[in-house]
Length: 453
Ligand SMILES: Cc1ncc(COP(=O)(O)O)c(C=O)c1O
Image (tube, rainbow, N blue to C red):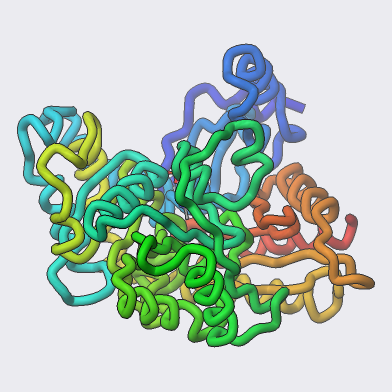
């Protein structure tokens, strides 16, 4: 069973030179992966889960290779992070050059060029041509925390509205903003105060057009919070963990308009949707909205940890000096990686590639939907596409079917992720560097898993 693994004498190099194939030489997990998972169970806190039971040793293009020599098709990009491809050569070169130069000075102690260059790039490529400024952080949750801090300081108000199905992170404030209790919040309270939840536009389940859905949300906000108390509303333009929910046309523009009229900061959380993922540089562009503040992370730096808040200069400048920052925020290696990644996003056809991937994934899923009523909805944009699984008799979410299809797909060497408040959505987030052949093969495996479930 492990003969091919035994010939794996050294760790293969990652990046696009890795053979682009699905290859199973052991069952998954193979013996070496099992060994690591046993050590993980002993050494790593139980709360840190994993989706694919493998020991990753290399990745690139559209595959992840494990320690047993299996090559798995990657339809998850490490949760929408390696959008330009794992170990992209431009990122590798930029990181190698920077790490030999200096690894850290702390931008708040001795500033350096790459941090400022990343801020300039973000100010330029985020929606809107107004004056903007940025601040850099380490993780998406930290960016969200800081966007809320900045909005409160600017408005002098305290309340924040988040939405049903929203996901904004696992720190204390972002848990409060996140909707789903299990696994993100359960038992971890008390949560931050002055957080309120409004209904989202969820066309497949609420049947409302965007205008009506916005009216419902605004009515709740006015009656239960009050614009006089409200610092900000925060929303993912397309929900990530919540189920890849695409709001009906008109929903987001109506919210932006209401915020402008009521001195409320509109924060778009583009941590999952940003950087070409949806076929536009930012999902806000899909809906024609210009947020006051935008949070980014994930795809920004080709796999290195970096996050940002970017937005209207007058809002971003509301904080006194020293009020924003952190020891590692805007680390020079992560900034070098981000400059390389942004160059790829802007100049290497990434938006077009995301739209091509949308055509392949939607085509394949709509084919399945046409013959299998358990596929209730197919939705998304670019390389951020999902299928929602239901009981055809009742339309109720079918989380058990969803979990079975995902598990069987992974066992056959295709990494897919689930999501959704009801756990009944499979989301497809391939790296844009994946080949069409691998995409089709991945979807063949998912289709077979669904047929067998
Ligand atoms: C929309 C959104 N916001 C915030 C976060 C939190 O980011 P991080 O995990 O980097 O803290 C995520 C992560 O999945 C996300 O998808």
